[in-house]
Structures are given as C-alpha cells and as structure tokens.
Length: 187
Image (cartoon, rainbow, N blue to C red; front, top):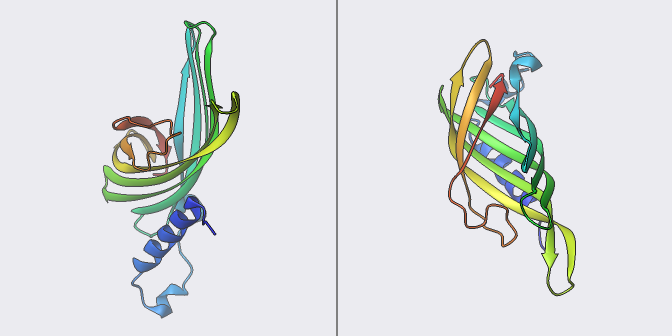
C-alpha cells in the first residue's frame, strides 16, 4: 500500500514539533496564555496582470504560532493560478488550483526558514490518449525568507524556495530558485 506523500510530510512535521518540546509534563497541561488572535497570522500573495499576457494568482494562507516566542509556525493555504497568452494562435492558457501545508522557523526577527508541501491540480496533455486531463502534482518547496515590518503587526515578506521533488509534471520542473513575496499580518 502506498502512503500519500502529504501524509508523510504531516507526520514528520508533527514529530518534529513534538521533539522540540522539552517542557516538563506538569507545565504541558497549562493552557497557553496567548489569545487566539496572538497565535494566528495571515498572509499570502496576489498577482494580477492584464493585457496580451494575463495573470491571476490568489494564494491566501493562515499560520499558527506553535511556541509562545512566535518563532515556529505551522500553516495551510489554498492556491489558484490562471495564465493566458493572447500572442499565440490558438491562445495558450493554464489553470491550476490546490492546497499547501507549511512550516516556518524564524531564525532571527527578520529571517525565516520555510518548508512547504504544495499539491496542485492542473491540466496535462497525454499523447497516448490524445486528451487533456486534470492531474494532482506534488511539490516540496524548501528555502527561506526575509521580513520587513512597516507598521504594527503588518510586514512585507520576500522568499526564495527550491522545488526538490521535481515531479515530471511539476510547474517548477527544471527551474532554479522560485522568488515570491507578499504581505503578512501577525507574522
């Protein structure tokens, strides 16, 4: 029986989080004094471009600060990508959606390490059947990022990730580093 890759990643992340917990058993039963609003953070990305080349990217995400210092976070998010190139005949289009699970560890206040499992549903042409079908494609992204605060608990983030699985159907197959940025609230 083959275990789905995302189940393995979640198990490893939960074991890692448990291994880092060195507090005595008596202290573990105490309730976390932080209100939920101090434990959650929200972020993601939004990309829009219109014209002969159209791009729509919507990637909201939410994170949970596991430790009271706010250094270690686990989170989830959803993705929607649409690309269209009107300069080709026929018009070239790409449409994908999916979900992600991630973990982040803040090394210092301005920098973090990031690991993410991204599962995208995309269209793929199959020569053997001469049909386009939707398939789920796994991606494992690792890297790090930089945070620049610009007021209150709002910050701009820039990150560099590498896709390490290199599934033959990956949208990142053969590409170098993946650069992205976004706005975070509470991170």
